[in-house]
Image 1 (cartoon, one colour):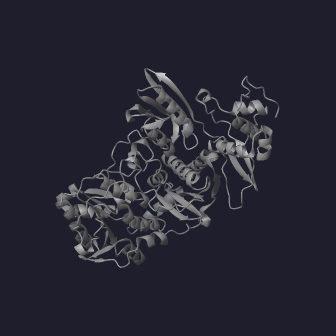
Image 2 (tube, helix red, strand yellow):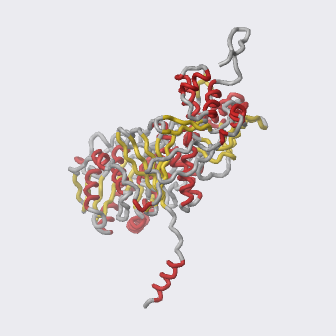
Image 3 (cartoon, helix red, strand yellow):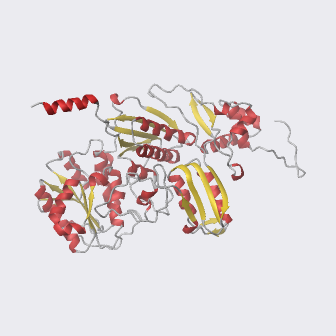
Amino acid sequence: MGSVESRSDGKAWTFLTNHARVMICIAQAPEARVRDIAEKIGITERATHLIISDLENAGYLTRTRIGRRNAYTVNPDRPFRHPAEADHDVHALITLFTGHDEARQSRPNVQPPAAREETPPMSTAPALTAQVSQQGGYVVVTAAGSIDFTTRPLLEEHLDQALRLTQLAVIVDLSKVHFCDSVGLNVFLRARRPRHRRGHRRTAEPSRICLRHHPPRPGFLSPARSGDRHSMAGERHQPPRRFHTGRRFHTASGAGGASSVSADPMTTDTSIHPEHAPVDNPFTHPALFYSGEQDYLDGTLPFVRRGLHAGDPVAAAVPGPNLDLLREGLGEDASAVAMIDMQVGGRNPGRIIPGVLAAFADAHPGAHRVWIIGEPIWPGRSPQEYPACVQHEALINRAFTGRSVSIMCPYDLEGLDPAVVADAKATHPIIRRSGQEEISRAYAPDDIIDTYNQPLPAPHPNSGAVTVLDFTAGNLHQVRQAAAEQAAGHTMTPDRVNAVELVVNELAVNSIRHGGGSGTLRVWAEDGLFICEVTDKGHLTDPLAGRRHAGLSTEGGRGLLLAHYTSDLVRLYTTPTGTTIRAHFTLPTPPPTPADLASRATARIRP
């Protein structure tokens, strides 16, 4: 490098930082070695590596593996980081020093492996811009673009600046924000809490952060109604199919959860024989084996009435036809029972614990005991759903240990496979049948969790093209947009397309944060399902991950939970060497073709 003129105190200064110089060098030569960049700038290789890592994590660089080397592409539409220049992007700076518009050209054309049948084009990163202004005595933070893992620092910086400027309310205008994930949501929740800064306590009261945005829309998380308590009670409850909208946010963030509620004083569960009740655990989880409608009523009605007579809250979360049986059998008492259609609220087995069972139990914290009939497995559950169902049954025991809750799970002996009944004996400590009950000698819920932690089946050969994308923080936006484009190409509604984008984003962020900083996305369609699979090198050691409420004071813990609430099924396989998570979305039924209509008409005419 040439000489740099020094100040009067002997210290040199320049207009550009080393981060800017590294980015310019990469724009000029995307395949340059770190050693060459370091030598050109006059810094160490270690410093250059750290700067590249900063730029990549912040979304200014995208890394592409070419053989044994890395090539980097500058994302020129990213904004400058300082609030004073945040309304400008770095493209002008790159063009100034490269002398052309090379920074906006597409990434290197890398031939993908043979298994990658199709890779959609990558689009330019959506920038987040933010500015702080004063309007009518209030400080307003106006944001536009996308709030996610990579743009979070800019939002945090502007919120901090706004909170320092006033002791009044800070209004955050999100009307021009088209995407906000759980990482962005955490920024708002963190801003609402008291914090320490530079040794001085600075309190940000909840009322000081006011969010202003359009009515709730898909792909947008909002804590606007986070103080509402989610309740599963009541006939009119509908499951949160668009959980990620502001209208549904309180489902995941309501205070409390299975892991955060203190155990009630030890009580005796009068629904089972005393010697069968664990002396140190008030939670009970019997299975009810039944054959036919009358046998079903004979086993369930006494359970419900015992809870009602004790003045305790009672819920029945069972398939629709069995709800009708219970209503008829209970008569006037049915109005005192929360009736939940499990075929709707429990469509995805992964959301039954947080969205049905724990939601109802948490809504009655002062109850002596909470009584729930939960029937998550019924004839008609698909082979893809069953492993998640039986794992759910095993995890109930972990989720409610220490709580005064009784959850009885009916099993249809006439309609279910004998293997399902055998698994029920392994997931329930007590078995009831024909008015009798016994301890299950086969009870081993942890074994069930391990047994069904199996590699997921490969895509069906007839499923068509499988899109494969590697990702890091640098191309996170491109990965979720590519998934959304694939979903739209399968005639999914805009609402569900945005759900796909959100779920892929949340799973990818989990991989970046906990799975080694990178991962691989595969997307395909088969058997009426749109499937998104994320694989990384992390190991998920908590079996209840994604099945607990994430309270307002919780940092993180919402990514996998959102996937459970938003998709129709989540399957997972994890080992010490890596984790694979699949989210399934039901594709809309295509309209009948003219040939189908003609065939049906012919069939009706035939005698």
